[in-house]
Image (tube, rainbow, N blue to C red; front, top):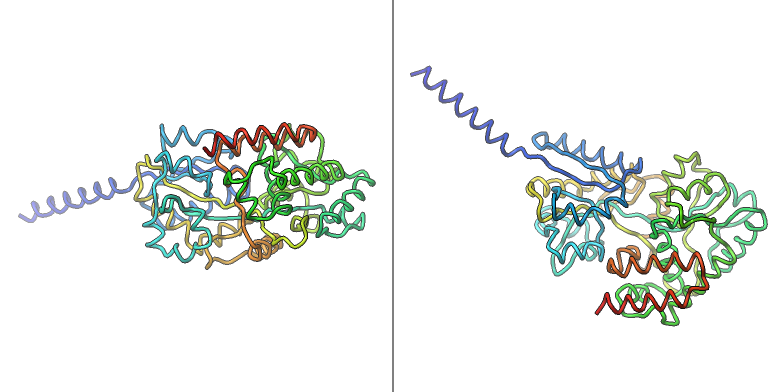
Length: 411
């Protein structure tokens, strides 16, 4: 009898183990940043999650951002992971509309995110539902070589006229004012966004990306006229259409160029290229139209659950983990960006502090042209921006083409 009981208990234990084993699933995550800082931050975060959830086998696939952008539609339909990184706003809209992302209102409600992530909730919402959890956002602006500015006795410009005057000093001394790499187009959109925000303000910029204003509108044309002045009187490095944003760090690092309109994620690349904190600094994009409320570019990054994910239960555990204040504090300290959770701590790094001061006092926050505009419009727009940068005489042709695309996209 005793022997039979032991056998029965052993059988129950084995069955329990098998059940536990069945519940312990693989959690596959696709992440989209191979740059050293973001990659380390993500990997550290995954290790922290695994330590808290030893029964979950996390499998990560880290890809280059451009490759991720190209592949996402295919893997969401053919072989979906359980989590994927992607972008809020209009950039998530095609996948939401196609039924390829899972709503996560329950994750927000159960973890207090409706309060702690309230600032970005509208950007994560569509059709009355919430579609992901953001983990970071970051400021854009002008990063510059402080040692070169000091050598040439240039102060941080706060107005358009001061920026043009600073560019003249740089050009007179053989330093190209701006570096940029437009091979993948979006960097040109960053310049456009800022000139348009400073020329016309946040509401006009939003109306343009919402399809309510034509590109040939005189206000938008003025943005391009200002951009042409920047090209003519400042200037960008040669051959920028053949360079990625990382390639464009080289002329900045070796002192051939002194400024870079860029997001804060580029700072780690600048330091990897040999520059120190004392050689790099940051200022807000200068005022163009006097008196306009200052709006800033501050894109957010987020994680989403594909509708075709196989392990949605553990995927929701991961999203709940990602949105926590302590997790966002640690992650953003590593990647040099700003946490979205209002209870998280902002890092001591000078660029993080400057970024927080910039975005927390802004009258409005734009996501980025290719996130605020629908994908088809953003593609045509960024192709037009690059074409204009390479040959400003094409302005009218570019604007007319963008109006044509706009009519098709927003109809």
